[in-house]
Amino acid sequence: MDTGPSTSSHPLRPYAVIPEAGDWSLGSIPSASSSRLPPSSSSASPSIRVSPPTNRYTSTISDLDHADAPAAGAMLKAFVTSSLLSFTGTALVMPFEVGKTLAQVQWVPKEGLDNIVQATLDEIEEESVEIEDENEAEAYFADLSNVSQPGFAPPTDAPPRPTSPSGYLLRSGINDARYGTKPEWVMPVVVQGGVWDMIKTVGRWKGEGWASLWKGQLTTFILDSIVTTLQPIVLTTLTVIFLPSSPLSSLPIIYSPSPAPLLLLSTISHALATIAVSPLDLVRTRLVVQSAQPLHRKYKGPYDALRTIFREEGGVWSTYFHPNLFIPTLLEGILRPVIHLSTPLIISRYLLIEPSTSPLSFGLAELLLGTAGLLITIPIETIRKRLQIQSRADFVRAGRAGGTGRAWRTCVETRPAPYVGVVEAAWRIMTEETGRIPRRRRRSSKGAASANKDEPKEDLGLMGLGVGSGLTQLYRGLGMGVGANCVVFLLGLVAGGGEGTGWAEM
Image (tube, rainbow, N blue to C red; front, side, top):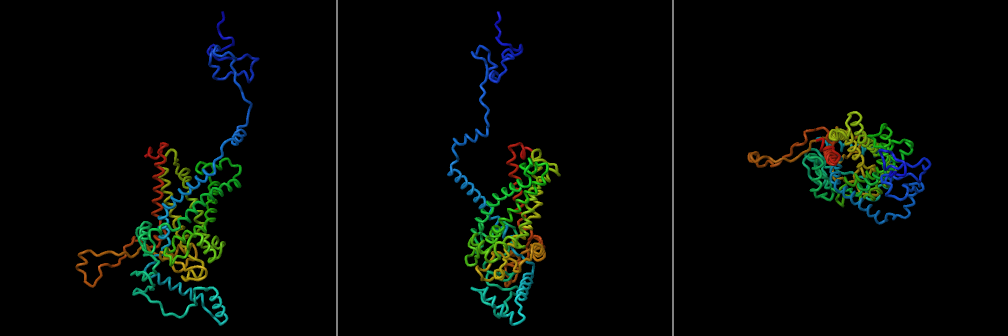
């Protein structure tokens, strides 16, 4: 008697049910689970139920009609939380930004050079008001009376300005043995110690205080938020226009087989975003550098600063496209992203170091190349900030009140004569300034005992960095940039430990 299964089966797979030739239909195909069961476990023939084909995108969209949409309150809460975190992060780094900016714009002339610059400035002003005949005199004083109202009277004959024993002009305010007497809103010269020494000086000086380390924080937060949002939008727009059919446009630049177009578009997007927010960057620099004393503060806030600059210095067009503002902005907007984006490409394509196989070597190479890039970007940043604090209004440059605002008072010493452009500013910084400053040093007890009683216990000596060249002034903030790169390198090692990188290779 035949006790085997009623349907044909393979001798090596006795439980696999093979339908007859005439039963090959979609409804009679046995499922994977039922084919492994003996025939006696099911009374019906093994088969699967196939639902009619559907479009998964259509069904997903239809399902969204029944799903709960995200509440507006949750979205608002997420936005507020993100903004607070970003604002807090800006507050943490703002003291270092303030210290770096003040160190970069501070003017430290060589011995006797401040008199030469001041004399040159006086000659320029005298030449600019030369009058040859009576008609020009009448026109000059008519224009002067119209421009200077209120708060400024035409200059009259005055006695020569007094000078110190060393020949420096005397000004009311703080007494300085080397530079004469400085205004009360100008801090002492700070060079040694770099950014950290500048931070301590700002906090301890009575004219500024610790709160001055957060000058321009709101403007910096707004500026960073706009750039972070605007740059990806510009990059996406450029990619859609110039690379519409490229399947590799969404890949990171380091993994793209043809990175040149993506690198070019990314650089252009960064440059356009930098130019778009250049007035806000100008406002931030002015707010950081201006005196914090209410009597000498010119701008009340970012909005007042932007409105005053538009009104006094040529309007929106001049604020964007004046050569002293547009050229350094364009240079920084191009050089900084090119260096940052091309660094991984150079390491991967030319040094043949991959981040997945040699993360420590890749991080060290990135640290070295990033530090080398600072040698290019720091001077451009310094020149740009010095040109930003240089007002284009004549009465502001002359240091007097008039027009629609107060005189421009900076909390650090700045060059009295304006720079003509980027190249001239770089040349003046390297040839006029120095890395040596006077610092008080106390005599030893034995020297003080043997000294004459009339001789002071303190004297002034040049105890600087040993560098007399102005090249040092052109690279203020370099140490802070190198320190930031080192912190990023260490954080990259810690973050990469989960993938067997970083610490494992070390």
